[in-house]
Length: 469
Image (tube, rainbow, N blue to C red; front, side):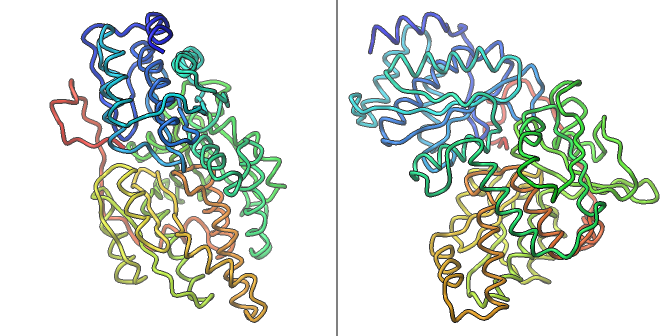
């Protein structure tokens, strides 16, 4: 081990004095500073795989950051983010000077009592950034130097790789660990839900999608044939021209509260934007007065939780549903959920891992950050109750319809992580089933006035409690 790691690490030297910290978003910085990081995350992922006796994911992406940046995230066995202790190991390995890398590696092995004779399996994916290919190769070098096996998925969205890891480690129970398997599972669930919508016109099926000039645009083009014309997507910022996340994408739309460049919006047309790695989504439209209306993560959580609560009532299921928010949530959404819908609301620290953990405490946990990153988690007990009702011949027609809708909704949702493609299809299905326009959805409650600003700072360590999402 020592010789292999030592030799290969020389091909990926660490710039002296460079220090980075693994946060909620993994490592992110300018791509030119990341070669050694990628090699070392290949090493760490291999150790994590040996420790857990499971497949681990490594996603090369910088999400909504500019195109010249890149980054890396590790994915744990059930498709969740890597644990806090291993985030610490990631920072420790990344910042080790070249001559102390082996010492730090041995430190992790000893602390975790890792049996180095165990096999290791790593899934790797990347977004469309030009630097992704060489950085992925550095990850592969790290894995191979510790004898790990890899499956390189190439270009995938971040949520797709999370899905693949979960499918692999559940031995196919969650789905098939292929891109086509992902398309098939989601599209079949969407088509089943669509059968419960009243006759939709072509206008109602039409959706304008801003792909942020990223991987989401590429994958939506691949997926569209699976949807059998039940959704007519008009794709803009599809990577054919324009830079990734530049003047487009979910983060731009949310922060600027304005439509992306490159999208020709008609009055009242339903539009949405993905971010660069397709794990965030926001919706919007312009009214007859030219006023821009944003429907962010709070509005998405409200729409989905309201729909789920109605189905639970119709099915006669006594399951606890809650919405998990952060301090970034608009106060109007909190009041509407608690006072009107009588849905429990839990507030937690910013950062997806905190929301995901809190959502696991409920039968059904709906979590969305205001930025449009989120999903829905169903406990095993809740899923079992729903499946039993579907199969029970004594279930009457109204209850049967409701539980079948719940079953298809569960299959449509990517429970491993926020997924723009999955979330979009859930939203489109809910609007169609409830016969709602985007204006009807927006009118559920009125947002309190809000503004988001980006502040540039020199060193993250100057703000040790600052959370990244």
